[in-house]
Image 1 (cartoon, rainbow, N blue to C red):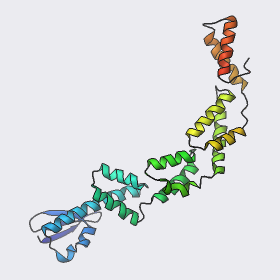
Image 2: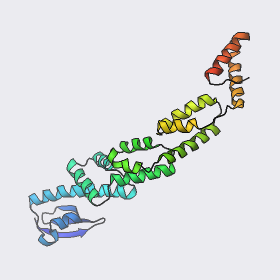
Image 3: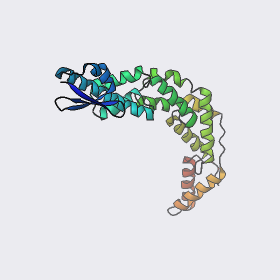
Length: 248
């Protein structure tokens, strides 16, 4: 089959016109690889090879377009291409080419992600590590970068969160607030040992206004069912369970 015409299109794609009236769109890399500008002839076997290689570059440029918008992990790109029904051969080709060109680097991704999380979020190191693993990274990809999240940074963040939680507390005793703080901080990915150390050195004073408010709330509720000594007992039982000792 003879190539009778080349027509350059946008984004490095060429349309080639064959003497059998068929036309094909190929990426510039395919044109150069098979030296079509020189030979100007294609046989059936070569055409099939070109179409297969072209599919690989289609996968590559799809991934590159995504990466130019937002940085991604290798696994995220793999999932994206799989979702667009590219075959394994095309995906493997794309991932290797992008890695060779420096567009895909999971260790660099981890470093950027961790630094950004330290600066802009209140997440602890364990939560950040979990999120990175959800994106397909392994421990070796992020272990060095995670060292940037030092114990001093962790303590500073924990302290700020504690101060914020205390200021926004409207219904909890000092005891219950401290317990909730510990659970919330663990769930947010901070290390238990550091949490306990900071909480041990944090004084949370009982807010008598909160105690009186909670007492009145449960008095109004329980007094509909109980009275006298029984009401007094039920109220004390409830208030003690909430961690309040001085509430009258």
